Length: 233
Image 1 (cartoon, rainbow, N blue to C red):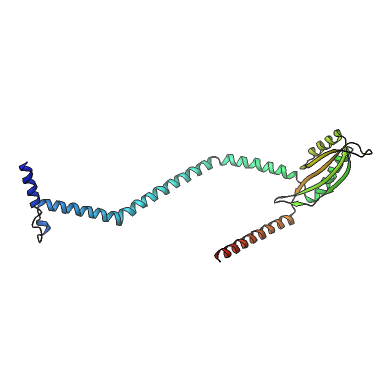
Image 2 (image 1 turned 45 degrees about the horizontal axis):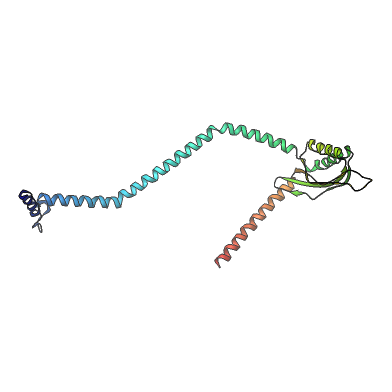
């Protein structure tokens, strides 16, 4: 115990009377402590001024590296499946081509109406009304509704619907209703509904569609600007 106390007093004595004494002449214990404190200060200053920014740069670099790896992996998978996608595209284009051939042009539209009317006459249907409606222009095609009212027996009417389905053009029957005829001169079933057919858009109609979309887009942007102005007020 006395030995430990003597060592402690000896160590404490090394820190006495250091004022005015050059650090190089200090005893070993003060010099070691001063060197340790200096080392801590240098480390803290270096961390704040230099090393922390370098570590952040390294972390950003690692994140960017991971992004590039993910991008490379995605591109590799896309390149592997490219041939399969090309084959799928060919099939889709073939399908679109077949569907386009089922859409008549405006020049063929009159002939298509004759085909529908001929299908009804061929089955002996009494056509009470066959009235084409206004053309409804869509994004890529035009829709033509035809109001029909006809009287026939059940069998002939079924055959007529079957004949319509066999026509090479796309034709649909919509909003059909059936009722019994009350006219003794025209016995049978009354079919009331719409036949819809479709056709290509003419170049003029396509240009008009594009112009209309531009106007709507410009009008929408103007409306947004007006709302922003009102919001600022």
